[in-house]
Image (tube, rainbow, N blue to C red):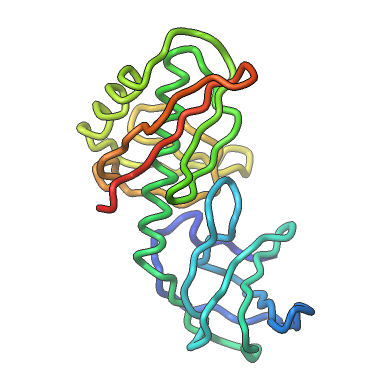
Length: 208
C-alpha cells in the first residue's frame, strides 16, 4: 500500500523510500515507494512527471492500493528524493479544477455529470439529465465563482477524499486541484452539444 501524500498536501519535493524496483517486461522498470507525491493517471487526469533521485519518471499508475512509477533505468531500494514537475502539476490542477466547476454549473441547471476527461487540450464533461442550458449560462456561473476566488477544501468521509471550493458541493475525487479558483485562469467552453441523449461540454483553459 502506497501512502498518497498528494491527497493532503501540495508539496512537489520530498523524500520517500523505494520499497521495490522490478523490471516491467517492456525494457523499463516500475518502482513502488512507501509514500508518493506523484499523482497516477486516473480520474480523468494524466499522471504527474518528474524524477525519483536523478531518474526521470515516465508515467505513474495505480494498481489497487499501490502506486507504481515507471522509469527507463532502475532505482535502488532505500531513501530517495522525489521531485514532481511543478509546471506540469499546475497545468493538470487547473484543468481538473475547471472540469469540476463545469460539472457543478451543469448540476445547477438540472444536469448530472457522469463522465469527465480533464486532459489538457481534450477537456470535456458528459452529463445526463434534461433542462435548458447554454454555454452562456454555464459560463456566467463559472466566471462568478472564479471572481469570488473560492478556496479549496479537502475532507475525508468514510475514508473517501472529498474536494470542494468554498460553498460549492463536494466531489469525491482523488485528483490535484488549485488552492483557490482564480489560479485556474480563463475557462472557455468550446462546444456544447447533445449526443445520444447526453449533454457533452468541451472546454479549454488558457495557458496562464
